[in-house]
Each structure stands twice: as C-alpha cells, then as structure tokens.
Length: 334
Ligand SMILES: NC(=O)c1ccc[n+]([C@@H]2O[C@H](COP(=O)([O-])OP(=O)(O)OC[C@H]3O[C@@H](n4cnc5c(N)ncnc54)[C@H](O)[C@@H]3O)[C@@H](O)[C@H]2O)c1
Image (cartoon, rainbow, N blue to C red):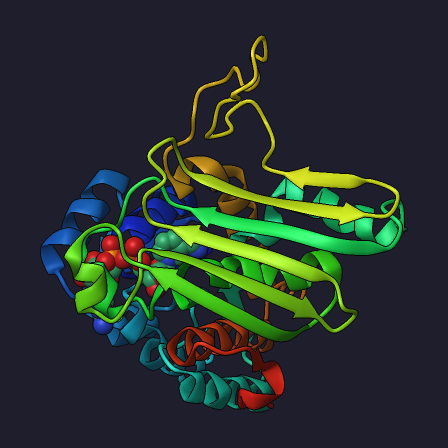
C-alpha cells in the first residue's frame, strides 16, 4: 500500500517509523509545514516527500494519516474526504465542537472511511477490562478511576493550540471509558490548577486537572491529568465492581513506589512517554487502519466516537470555567 502522512512532529515522526516497519506499507510519502522536518524523517525512513497534502493525496495514496498540530486536522480531513482517500486522523478530529459536529455529518454523508487515533482501544489491558465488564465478572460497577499523567510537559508552543488539558489529555480517558463500559457520561464536575510553568496559564490552560463524572447508569468516575508526573508516564484505569476490581496499567513499570515496608512492587523499568507506554497499541491501531483502508473492516473508532469524547471534554472545560456541575445535555451534539 502507498500511505501518505501529514505532520512529522512528535507523534507524526513516531507513526511514520511505525508505518515504515509494517509489512503492508510498500511506499510511504510524508509532508509537513516545515519541509526540512519532512525531509529529515523521509531520509531516515527511505520515504518520499510531498510539498503539501494536496500533492500527497494526488500521488495515488491508498490511505492518508493526519498527525499535524490540532488546528490543521479539520481542513486536512476535509481534503482527504474530498479526495475519497480513507483517512486516519489523530485525536482530536477538530479544534472545536462545532467543526467536530460538521465533520461527523460530512463523514456520514460521504461514506469515506475515517479512523480516529484513540490508541487505547488497541491496548491489551484496556481490552481485557472491557471483556471483564462485558462478561459480568466484576458484577455491578460502582466506581472507576482513570488517569493520564504525563511525565513532563510538551514544548511550550504546543499548549496554545492543544485545546487544553481535557480536550488534549483526558479526552483519551473519556474515549476509553465509553469503550470499556459501553456507557455514556451523563454529567461532569471539573477543576484544574497551575503549579508549574507560566505558559499554561498564559494559554488559559491548567497543568493539572481533576473531574468527577457520573455515567448514565450512575457509576461514578474519578479522572485526573497532569503534565508533571516526574516518576514516569502513568496511564491507568481501575474498574471497581461488586464482585471484583480490574486495573489497567498496573504492572512492574508502574510510575510509583510503595510507602509500605518490605513491598518491592513495582520492580521493572519505568516508562517515560506515551510512545513507550503504547507502542504495541499504536502498531495495532495503524495495522487496523490499513484493514479499514482496504475495506476489510469498518472503522474501529469513528468520528462519531470522537465527537462523544470531545463533548465530555467540552463539558469539563465549561465546568472548570463556571465552577459548577455540567450535564452533557447542555453540550451540543448530534
Ligand atoms: N494519540 C496520541 O497518543 C497522541 C499523542 C501525541 C499527540 N497526539 C496528537 O497528534 C497531533 C500532533 O501532536 P504532536 O505532539 O506530534 O505535535 P508537534 O507540535 O510535535 O508536531 C506537529 C507537526 O505538524 C506540523 N504541521 C502543523 N500544521 C501543518 C499543516 N497544515 N500541514 C502539515 N504539517 C503541519 C508541524 O510543522 C509539526 O511538525 C496533535 O493533534 C495531538 O493531539 C496524539
């Protein structure tokens, strides 16, 4: 297959490398607003460079992968759809709720396959947790804890266009929560704090956040995020039920240590980034995208799914700004 990729920053360069190593990728062509960055990634991987997305799409791509900064997602997704090329788009689909709603309608009406990059859906632990909920082995669910704790902040210029910590980080927790439980979020109550670099506050963002969610079956969900988890990259979910609890991410690479004497868990090397934490999931996700592009399966994470996760993030930002609980029914949807 010939795969085109736009945006070779942190995740784009990583996805390009993953794609180049996959059997089904015969040709890889990359583009970036910074031509030097595109050339350097292409040279490293033996890929081609296109001057822009239009040329890339016109060069016979069988699949289009969007990994640019967030503001370019929506226009590039429109370009991919107009060219009729199956498209993988990193989260979020668009920078705003309105654009996400419009794109959900557009994708529905054109039928061009679109797969959104919520890689936790391909992580073995989250899939086991989903199976445990589905089989009923946990019994009645009462409480879930979910966290996305980055070891260190991204570069300062990333923050003003990131959409804020709920749309950028916890949106992964919101998506996987829907995937694991099969439920929708009914209401949120969120807060945030700035205790680190000034550039978060300057962008109207926070570096640490917490949210209390209630699902439509009254399960309570405690969600947290931070850009300052010095002990390592820590992404986990605990699903507590009447008959048992299952924990995702509770392994020997856990980014914490016990205060209890004689406890030597965890014993393994820490993980420091989302790339380390989710490498196999990213590989599985991009392999699934190839199957989507070949028409062998439907999208495992649709624009509609992305819209629902984005609505929860939107509700959290509103709740944080107005310091009040927000019902999801207050947030526009489809
Ligand atoms: N799924 C995940 O785990 C995950 C992880 C990190 C980032 N992301 C998402 O991926 C996207 C990129 O994040 P990043 O950390 O790699 O950002 P980044 O700032 O490191 O890289 C963005 C790249 O996009 C390029 N770019 C910007 N506008 C462009 C345009 N119009 N055309 C072509 N190239 C353009 C920039 O030059 C840069 O190279 C963000 O939307 C982010 O939300 C997802």
